[in-house]
Picture (cartoon, rainbow, N blue to C red):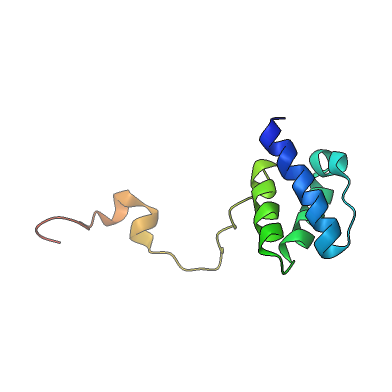
Length: 95
């Protein structure tokens, strides 16, 4: 773990205690993904911009940021789903 990550963790612990009144176990935050998600979510719900930004940065550094799954019920353009089907031109002189 690099010095920047250690600094972020220490700052997060201090801000969580000051802003949210919660004590954070840093070892568990790094090792337990479920605990990390719950704790970082609590930080993201804070009114403190610094705490929210730090929680999001830590979530990214810990690999807990994920893209939202695509809505399966959403209708997609069938021509875009299978490029071999539509063969429509989207760009060019005759589009």
